Image (cartoon, rainbow, N blue to C red):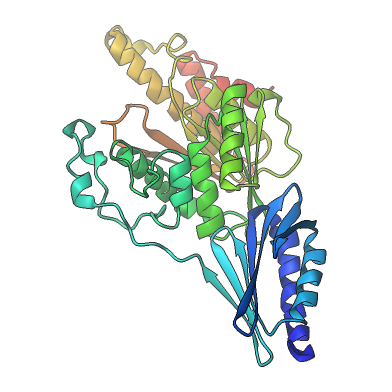
Length: 396
């Protein structure tokens, strides 16, 4: 390849070198083809232990990105044509070069056709209800693009079909992304968004959110998962390794013991039991998180605390008292978040036919404090004779 083409190729590779330095956590690999006449010589490189493991013509070596690109430019001098693909999660960058032209194109990964047969999926057992069928909608987590993710979390078969007994779960995770779509757009731009998942469990929804932010929204993000169970943390680490999601870290520890070493933009708590939800929310408030998302699970704390004389005749029935405790718990959580300067909305996450624990609390930080909401909160504490865990954790 002539000197003019080599110089232009050098400029493109220098740009990719800077891109790799900033976004190596989403780098997937490089694929190189050199041509001389009708002969093709292929090279493949993948990220491994901080280096790129590069195999060319049967020889495997480990390189830093700058030394690898120097090798590619040296090799290009002895070949006529180069085709080079730099793959990131969700994006392929193609460079083609010969003695006449050097071109670079940046394109999304091609989407395969939806392979799931909707009509056959709708023939599932009626016990799943309406949510057991694929919906007539443009999914956020698309079959084709998201196949690797969907297979890893067990929703898709090896053959690329949404499993019949996982269609409901597929609809749920997609609706989860839909409910967060507008909120995600309000997160800081042109910087890494740090997302903390408290009580992460096996982190299925966090993996989904990672995929969507990184590969669809093209946001630079980093995920931190906390859970006291060594087993689920090990499982999450393995899934991240299988998917090549290097922008994730997981720690087996108590939420109350976590001390962030970076700005936390989003705190998530999904189905954390009882006051574990309050621990997560309190952590979000203390670190001044931009967004707090919670889907509470069981509500036991206020059930044995609260009393309200005007409702004495109603609350003598245990089922009424339990349901009222659920409403009061999440209602007071929402009010305290408002008092701490958050704009709060509460929506149904999934159908109540699936589970009665189906509320999602979404809170976006908009100001420092709301004195009026704080006064209302104190009045409720007094009227109901309660001392909620969220208030306790925030003020420790």
